[in-house]
Length: 283
Image 1 (spheres, rainbow, N blue to C red):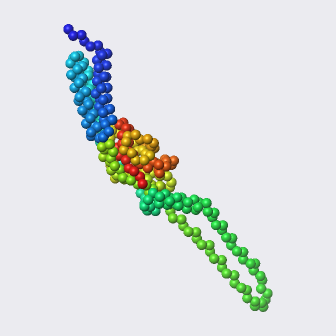
Image 2 (image 1 turned 90 degrees about the vertical axis):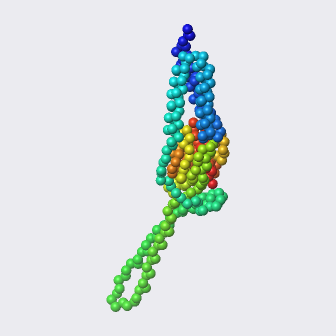
Image 3 (image 1 turned 90 degrees about the horizontal axis):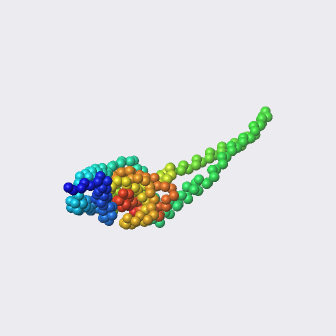
């Protein structure tokens, strides 16, 4: 009579199968460089091969482990399918994003920077310029009593000219500083336009219009990256915010201390698999 496997070993066998099969599939998806459908296919292949190996080796030698191991893998498979379905559906947002014309219609980065510097100088001078003092109204000479019979005419005083009205300052407007188009990365879909807008009320935002990228594995972040790169080594970057939706118009506030001459690439980053979904170089 074959000796029964203790309950503790059954639990360990089930946990081991969980680590090897779904865990290995996750690592395969995460570390396949091409990402997208190729990475998912690699994960599925790993799942099938690892399950077959466990079935041909461990489960044939220990038949009483078949039920706990197979039940564990079945639950894991259902959970993976449900998670994949929910995550890959993505979500659409439709915000009212700010719009603006490019700065002085600059044709190069140097012209754009010069226009911005001139604009800032004009605003500074206007703020520091002292306001003109109000002119005091001229005092009228005291009236003199005419003696009876006096016929001497007095010279009429000219009326003071009114002060000219100060020129009205043009209202501040939003200004587009940078822009670029999204491209898919690591085998993912990516399209749309990114633009950095300086707001009339102060501050800067980055806007996405006609935006459409793969939802990836969820937990997508918006990064401002230092230079364009197709590798998964991010280097130096600024974490702007969690992506609101993988489709639709949306915008995000840029921290005031961010140097856009340095961090000039918008990256949509998938945190679970540490890979790029899409990016746009700004210029």
